[in-house]
Image 1 (cartoon, rainbow, N blue to C red):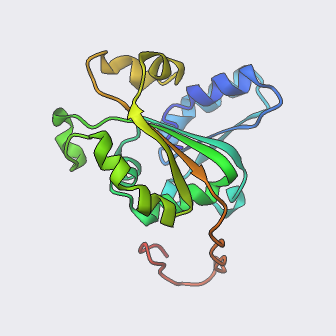
Image 2: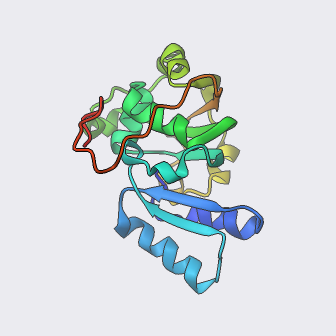
Image 3: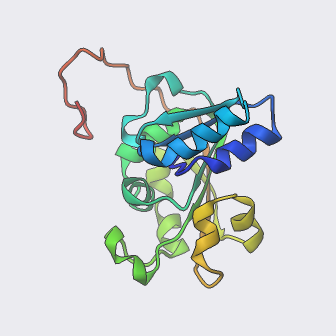
Length: 196
């Protein structure tokens, strides 16, 4: 989720031919490069979906064995850090029960445009009850290692520099919460997150 150019998903698709790697990002421009590469390299197990977390297609409900979010920005970053149910509930919906959601996060003083204060692990740990309310149990929250950051394959991570603090957050979908009923897409109804 928040796949950017989709190149990290391409690495998964190349390395694991029996796995369907799905890159989701709200920017078609960003995903276009990865999609073209998948076509050129004939990777039938790479899928590129233009969607924000807040408008996640229901066709993906409960499909992911693992969800990876690497250094998100915008509403995805704010929703995870602020434990916004409009981000957490669809994130949980995407994952199968017992699936891991692994996230690398960073907010530094220079990132004032995010509207968030510099990130601390204590902030994320304090969100554990809100994560649990969205069917996501907090498994890990601490400083990410240089190896984890490098292994993410993120092109953005390569540009950040070694002095930037990055936190590793791991959540696990519990499967205890009942899925919300699906709305008929023809309904002109506004949900709790303000979407039609």
